[in-house]
Image (cartoon, rainbow, N blue to C red; front, side, top):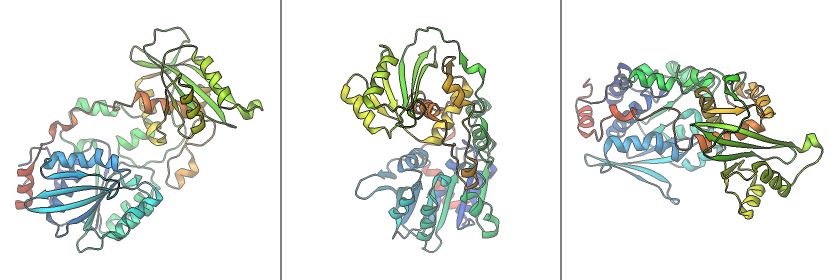
Length: 435
């Protein structure tokens, strides 16, 4: 018997997979940590091992995220003697599964760019697993479906909810019953391995639209203020503190504003100590790299800065700082939605505080909104106006605050999983419904 505590919904997924009662497309969606991905990982393994075919496709937003969310779990389930992950610049990434005398190859690809579909042209596959399908570009999705030309080929998709006008929702989930697809909606209560304390912990990690999507499992639009959780309790008096570390984050502009934010760590909380804001358009005078560098040195005022986190598009300014050799300049991770989500979590949990002198930052918190036109097109995007401080805050959160941590304690999540469940898989394949 499996050691993992399967919920009725998870049992239904496994039973239908083993007994070939699944659809051409099978979709698992809902809240985070609801057990949907682990369940589909196991279902995918069972499907691949039962399939008469030997070549398959697996995809994610990137191959890195695919490995982190899925491949690592599958290696954990099967054991490293039965599952091998290979990556090469020439041949791309592959997951090779050897089980009971069978060898199966899963080609692993990133799928979030329009030209990613070119990576799978010409493939003929017996099945496709897509992790975070709402982050796949539509051209890749259509191309991958067209590659499933072998008899009995099936697709397995997982995702968290997104905007209700997303093509995955309108074209596939909403039409699943009509087209004979299988669709399961998961909530936190569908993961029987989670203690109540952990559920409360994870609920506290999200706010606003991200809470509704990732905790409640709702497909709702991003609308209104992005950081609606920002309030006066996050403001702090501008007084000296014995900060343990210092960083600067920078959003660089030529005609647009250039922003420098000075951060300090004090008793486990990151404080925005001060801000520098200069708009060449408003001042009718642009500054070059040398002038901005001099302003930055004056702004830092001799503090021991760990690094300057800079807008990755500011190539010339990054090079200028590095050539000077006084400060370490790092290109920021500019994943906008990830940054917004993590920043909202930090605000909600009180990890960030803002000195009252940071007036431009406060103004932007009060006006930073979702783009309603983009929402209507199925995309989540902030309005590109008055967002320079918000970008600099986001760079700091993603690259410093959340660099080596998760928004919630994840240590308990693997406790209910069975390592190397070879016997359980054999039992499932042999007897089908063993629950």
